[in-house]
Amino acid sequence: MNREEIEAILENSDLDDEIPNDSVSEDEEDEISEVGSVYDPNLSEGTDEEEEVSARQQDVSGVFPSKNGKYMWSNKPVLSGAGRRAKENVINTAPGTTRYAIARTDDIKSSFLLFMPPDIVKIVIEMTNIEGQSVFGHNWVEVDSITLEAYFGLLLLAGVFRSHGEALECLWDDRKGRPIFKSTMSLRRFQNISRVLRFDNKSDRNERRSRDKLAPIRDVWNHWEGNIKKMYNPGECTTVDEQLVTFRGRCPFKQYIPSKPGKYGIKIWVLCDSQTSFAWSLQVYTGKDRNCKPEKEQGRRVVLDLVKDMQGRNVTCDNFFTSHELGIELLKRKITLVGTVRKNKTFLPAEITKLKKKPENYAHFFFDNINKTTIVGYVPKKNRAVYLLSTLHNNVEINANTKKPEIIDFYNKTKSGVDTLDQGNKP
Image (tube, rainbow, N blue to C red; front, side, top):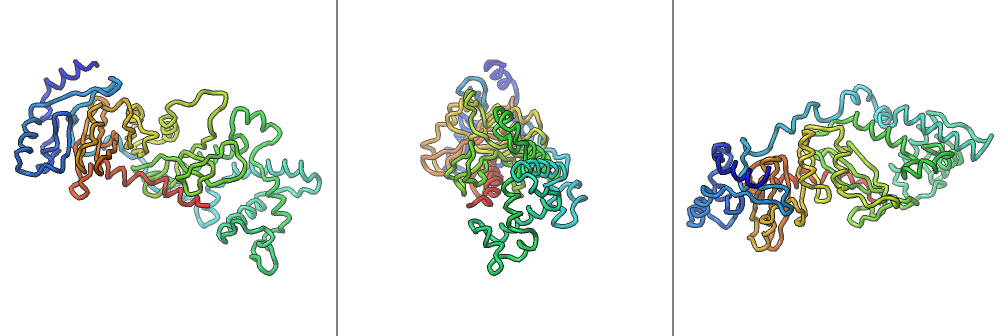
């Protein structure tokens, strides 16, 4: 549909009949300008300026092309209903712990074993024994499930005792150590298991690593990542962002992100529940492939990968991920999107980026009614503007208390799910 056809439809349609009477309150009747829907805090009730804007509202039904000419943005929403679009956010499963997890949880140990099921334990035991026999020969005492559980238990206890940087000999020391370590297994046994602990067959690793940098743990990772989805159903709001798992050892895809608590580590793309920060879907970033061209639209691809088993929720993300194309694709999967947008994105209408000289708390709205998308430009303080895209919201809504668009408040409320999860990765 070209621009002329869209303009003809808008001119021949009665937009006021499409919007319920309660969709715009009396306090918000000054929110429509000649180039889009706006909220200007400097306009007060009963002023001549307000009457002038109200008159313009009745006459104008503009259509504004995006910078790339691919999309048409309107100054009014023509969809019926106000506020958020609810039909895309219909959750068929109750948020929270699943029945599968509840039925298999009796105590602390059973809770832990939910995330370390028999299929993962089997791989670790088999590969560790293969490596143990290769290194120690006939002197190797094979690991079984009880030994492996004891080993993992000691690792967890070392964290409980805040033993980071403490020598192993101190933990097993007769006078200064913790008795439970020595009572569980000898120091030599613990060191031997640590030396040969493996998650794959080392003999064919190089061949697999040529195709997959995560080859040493790929099988275990896939089992574990798929298993966590059985434990928890995310709520109506989810967050997608990057997490940095602190690590300073040797790794070909180790990242440096100064904004993260640990700064150095392994980057993981995470989709988590916005309220509880439960990590529901994860993908390890293994760096750029030297033999391939740099990946285009990586953010879009990451989000689509993470939500492949989810529907009926909203995804909140930052401007690395957000695009109009992503919002359209997610709506097809019954998922809405709220995210910040960079000013230079070509799907934006040129008019919305001209906010530099606007007053504080000024908001400017545009609507792609064909693709059910709302964009708002907002001035939080003088000479600064932020831009957000939403397929969840469909109207000009300003919070009476914060004086901010409802899209902004919603984003601020749901954006920090992964950041909260990342707080546990401080060195």
